[in-house]
Structures are given as C-alpha cells and as structure tokens.
Image (cartoon, rainbow, N blue to C red):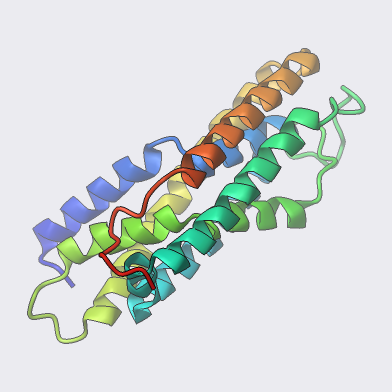
Length: 223
C-alpha cells in the first residue's frame, strides 16, 4: 500500500472523480427521480458491482490487454455504446407514472412501481460495458503503487476496492439528493417525466460519444 500521505491523496482524488457527473451518476439520479431514493441506491450498488469487474480485470492484466488491442477495445466500446443508446431510447419512450398517489410500499413518498433487480442490472451494465472505466483504472491507480511493491496486482486490487468503497457513499449521496428533489416536486409528475426524457437524450449523447471515441492507451498493435 502507498504511504499515508499518498493514500490520503488517492482517497481525495477518488472522491472528486466520483463526484464528476457521467453515465453512472446520470443513471442513479434518473432512477431516484422516477422511483425514489431506494431505487437510486440500488442503481448505485449495481454500478459498484460493475466497477468490480473492471478492478478485477485490471488487476489480473485483462484490461491491459484490452488497452493494447484495438479489436478488444472496439468490441467492448460498441457494446457499451449500444447499451447506453438503448437506455436513452427507453427513457425517451417511457410513459409517465400511472398514478400520482404515493405507494405505501415506497420509502420516500414516491411511487415504487419498479423492479429493483432490473434497476440493479441496469447500473451494473452501464458501468461494466464502458471500456473507459477500465482504461481509467489502468491510468489512475498505478500512480499510487510503489515501484518496489512486492505484489503489484494485489496492491492494484486493494486500491481499486478502496476507490469503489468511497464511491458507494458518493452514489448514496446522489440518490438521496435526487430522491429529496423527487419528494419536493411530487405534485408535478409530468415535469418529472420530461426530466427523464432529458436524461434519455443525455444517455444517447454519452452513447454516441463512446461510439466515436478512440482508445487513448492503445499501442500501434492492430490485433
């Protein structure tokens, strides 16, 4: 593990990076706005699970292989872009909530007619299918691993777990904020529906951006 001051820097940088809006944050906020804080938190845990895929892959060297292989990067890139586009289109075509009456089963006065398993899996795939997350870990985490570390893969994995652990609290914060907003504007569900459509457009934008992005860590290899 890095020295204490380097570890504090890693945690601080990780928190700032986790606060930066992107597809993951957008997914959490959109779920919380539509179905309440609980749905947003579940979405966040799905994203956390997806992030563990990248952490493990990077620790064992799979992500490095992907970074060096344009073919592997391209396959994952198009898969992730297609998924983000699909999520965006679904949000655009979604119908307003059936009723404005709070569901007694809801945790925060917002209709809770949502399949939490689908919310979790949506968060998982939003993160796991984004190759830029893998490249981020390859570029960011090694800076905090000592050159003489006895077990670099283990050090990488532990730092990745720490980064992901910190992200849980950030994600809960986003979900709580969005859930609070949903409660305050619960009387204007039609406006909430238009917010979801705007989120759909943003997901489509993220998907298109990913589709036309290059591999920043790629070598000259064409394999």
